[in-house]
Figure 1 (cartoon, rainbow, N blue to C red):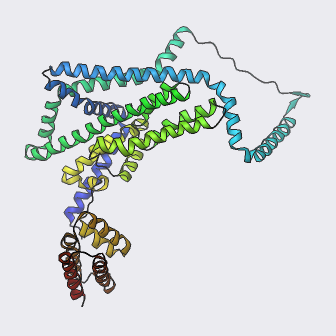
Figure 2 (cartoon, rainbow, N blue to C red):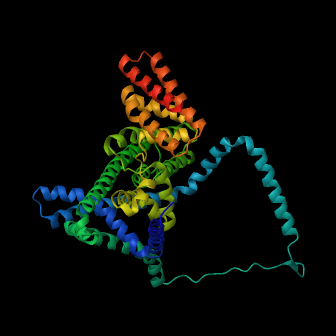
Figure 3 (cartoon, rainbow, N blue to C red):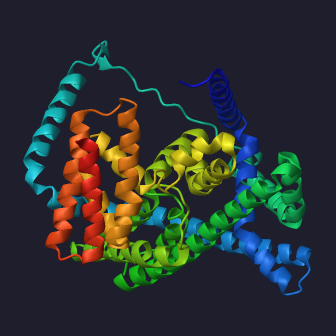
Length: 464
């Protein structure tokens, strides 16, 4: 049983987490620009350090890095806005071809659709026939005519929607500049805040976080840019309108985990269906995105990321849903770097270790503990798969010494405490016997086979 001290600590941590989430939720106007600024700092810090090592003044390195980043983002936003306006203007012309292609695709349900349409038209005629009349005349239709806006009102309607995003962008840039300028001092203050006695732990946590997040952002930016360029060239070659727009959106949307690449591909595929009178070009567009995604996911990301972010895929999916609930679309965009920061905190701060256990992608149990756990749960097939996987990377003798025998020791301990029944004991004996026979049939060398036989003898003697 947990001691009262452990219960109180768990309760205190739970209450703290709830309070932190509540503050992040209701003070999002403050924390969203701060989070974006931290993200921008992680992205530009390696570039600033590189320029600083070239004997360039740190202030000048910060100004150059931020200016280049802002200019690139401004160009990206301009391309998206300009091209999107062009798409909106052409949209009415796409409708006819889109309807024709979709009608061909859904021809097998056309009869049902026509029947539904006829029923709706009949219902509309009945409603019009039963509409109230006054003195044999239908009720006159009242039209509301709005007063044309004045010049000041038009100017206000144009500027008002841009005030908040431009203000947020300005705050993010200012925060990022000051963080980059004072980055060494900020590290020192964090160390002081967490206590000088935790100097090593705090330093490791800060370096681990900075390395993981900065590497992820830089490599993801390179991969997204590479894919955006190929999307632009490929769509331009296929004749898809506004190829630059779809390439720019690919660069931006691939930062969103899981759904971003699908959304980036769905829009140009839909436009190609609306533009071309056959299905060959839309299929080629879809194939282009599939090929590029396979290259990015299976070649570029493992090569450039190396150790990757350290967050398990399932935890990342849950974290993406959480940050989206917390901060909307911005939270979805920030889901991966924020989750990495939280996971690293759990790795280096003992009180938050549960976060590392929940979010990390590293195994939380040693192989012998995994084996014992699977056998206790009655998962014989999973135990066989675990031993087969371990045998691919270790010799039979090491499998015996490092996996089977330690698992037997765990079983002996639980048996001595009265926590292991006869069926589970028999599973252990059967497992060792089966693996000894399998290795013997595979012509395992005499030395390792003898060691496996010793394992089997030990387990059988223990169960006698």
